[in-house]
Image 1 (cartoon, rainbow, N blue to C red):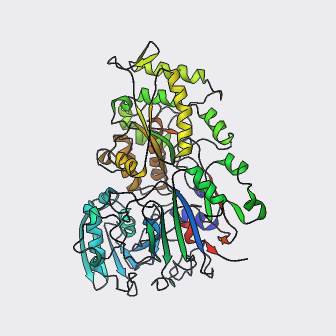
Image 2 (tube, rainbow, N blue to C red):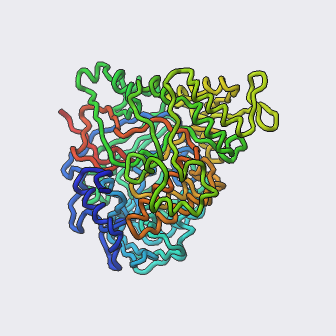
Image 3 (cartoon, one colour):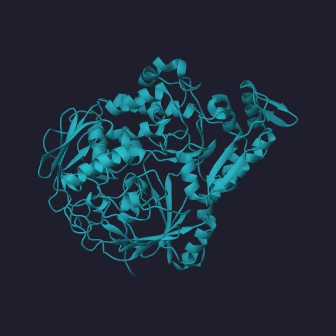
Length: 606
């Protein structure tokens, strides 16, 4: 059963079961919320989100550690580097997302949402009490300015949905309607998730070039209190926050202060946590979690180790190859890299083999591709693209498995064969490209990515045995972001989280239209007619069969495309934190995701 694969919790089961028919979408009347499929799990008179404690005490502070730096306070433009948390903690949208359902939104700045049976339009009505942090009301004019600004000069992630808006019009004193130019059932939800900015603050200012010069005025419960570029940023809870009594916000935004400290690398960050300078630490390495989190504060009970499970897809984490570059345009070269990457040995070295490998983009969920050849509806969807599919997409593909030894002899033999098939040869111990020149490529990493650097060092040793000596370049965050946004790399570290309800973001991640768009998230530069078609089916599926089949088909195209060398998965989040920090016993289906920590957490003295 579909729900059993996602999560055992009853509320998630009920939601997904309701969606199995994929019928009865949003009615043409104002609603308190909207689900991608079926109806929202919570009724109009709900009191709070199921993973929030409505009577949680207010107060305390959370101090996180971040590697790298920042030079901007505007997370909605391409220019600059901002603390990633700002997008989610310092801004609000018309609708808020529940992390206990695959894809459901509830009213936040908007009190109601209305959409037609085919979702070719959507209308929002603003709450009369909605306010910016300076006390001014949120108006339809602010909303319309925000959407047009973000959609035209904002970050590329906003432009795809804006391009599908045929018209935007005010329909009442507090109402605004969007009419869509394309058939895309998800747009009604996507449009409700755009950050709302204050128009007056930006009059006479260059929004697209702003950096540290403008401290944003927003509607969120947290406002920027203090910062020093590259060193720290502090958010403080606004005591006059307009939405503190909303059902959606009850039990959320409980902490008085959230401070982000920035460090040059992960080693220094960890020492700062051990010394008590930070109050929380997420740990991605299972071996380190077991062996290095026994320092005095843990032994005294001042620091608590919490493990949070989840039911979302693994997503993809690893090293992406840029197919815009000649060296990785050939799938056989990418396949050779897969064989040369000695995961079993790397996993033993880095985690004591305690973390399983990611096997596909949607693994750990019902949406993941199944072993062996494609069958049934999946094969029907992929068959028209048989001539363009990467080898294994139809007949079955699985990642190479090494013998776990450092030499990886069998894997390197396979890699060498693939290189030979692609026209490469060895001369005097050097791998030569078909044009007779030595094969060279660059692996670009951000400063502070210690674990990724260690993995790359092991990978490079295997490549050297093949006559390939990659250039490993480590640069600061600002330079790194600039190079990644302009696709100026051959290989780099890659991470994409995926949801239980894949939709329009898939076009941004792997769609052909995003491949040549500067700043897009299609880092591999893939242009696959099959992937584009699977995304189209996902967005307009009217049956459970088509939705799951399209996701599995997309998973096959991505995985067999050999675009990313996967590393280990994180099906459990490991969070070490001050004993005064608490969270509800019931965690959402998405687990430790986006803003669940810190929004649902609270501080309570002994």
